[in-house]
Length: 258
Image 1 (tube, helix red, strand yellow):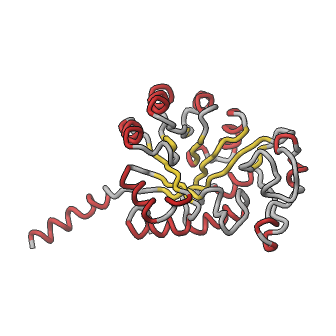
Image 2 (cartoon, helix red, strand yellow):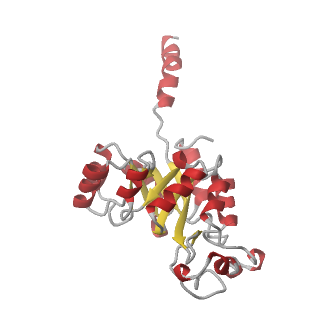
Image 3 (cartoon, helix red, strand yellow):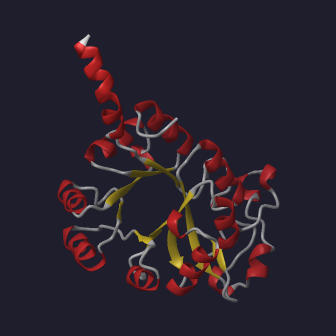
């Protein structure tokens, strides 16, 4: 009886200690939807991901649009550099047809559209490709998303902090020297890792600083064994190409609320 009572009293405390790991959907759910588009982001939300990863670039007329590549060649029916095309020219392209006829007519989304879609539903992992700190911070703030983004950018991280210290910057760890500098100069609340820098000595430095650790798990490591290994090594977030499966796994293991 005393054992049962003790377990009953301890249960809330033990539950409070359960680690939570966030699921980051790389370019939205892009294995079955055109990457960096609204259908891909809507599916990631439906699947229960915590973040969508988006690649932000600036058009020739100063608008913010989503594209991983510097050109539109791979993902649309057009040709040319994103930075040399106007927003109107980019919006005239079909960003879905290469993923299948059911996606024909899908447009390249503006950053504003994605911020509106995400608000109240999902966080945004912003991958800065080609955009100024001033423009990025302004758009995030205007859409009320300052508390719901992490920003992956080494180049403009300091400037972002100076404009809005509350924003979560997330520089890449790279190596021991770089992560030491990140900790000393930026006091980054989140530190990003790829496969090459996910090493014990770098992980320890980042963890000891109090930062959260978000690691990429794509390719051969994008499955239960790779996810669990990352979690055991200290990951607080996992970026995946398989958001539905990762969300299910995290829920089953107790790392994410049902």
